Image 1 (cartoon, rainbow, N blue to C red):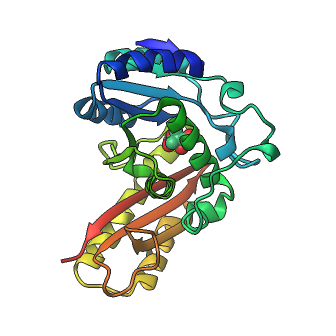
Image 2: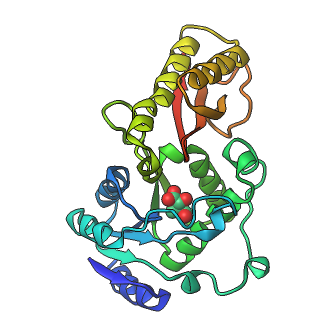
Length: 283
Ligand code: PAF
């Protein structure tokens, strides 16, 4: 894998591939790579000639009380994984390469409404931080396509909306969540769990499935289902932040006519904040 840390070197390398007419895919990450990230890379390799992965822990998307300092940084292990995965180029810029101005003087990319609900309600500014850095990475790499995991469903919709609204000529592809055998969605934050908490963690996915099954069998009392799920998670020892049944298209409250739904959940377990979701189509 070719590894670069400046936009200049990145662009020189990409220009060679572009001249040869090669199609370029980007997987943006914050590192600490797990099989979920590698699934994105695998899919990208099927769809493009060159695979670029970026590793950048983006301070702009962390709240002041969040885990920016604790966020796992495992560059050496990550590089080894990227070599095995057949990645062509690793872009790992320093903070100053991405942000040259103080926070208050930066241009920000704000995607309204969808950024303010669910995870955005408890993490103010988070999705602006995500949209801003992804916009920058898109402009730096100028990929033909970019891949994102469905685990961060709200993030995926924010990025799709940004790309559409700002007329970015980039195809956004989503890739299904990769799970442990017991259903727990892979996440770098799973590393914060103690062995005891790790045993409790699959409760989130179990509860998503219980709710999905109830909806599929005709239950339309979504408020009651949400409340039951919150109670069940609390009983299992988690601290749910939200458990919501939404319209998959834009995460609005569903009406009786909506057939494409997504159930989204966030819960604290010890010091880890875990999120997960499950999409369903009503017939
Ligand atoms: O999903 C992530 O890892 C991050 O939010 C992303 C998309 C790399 C932006 O920093």
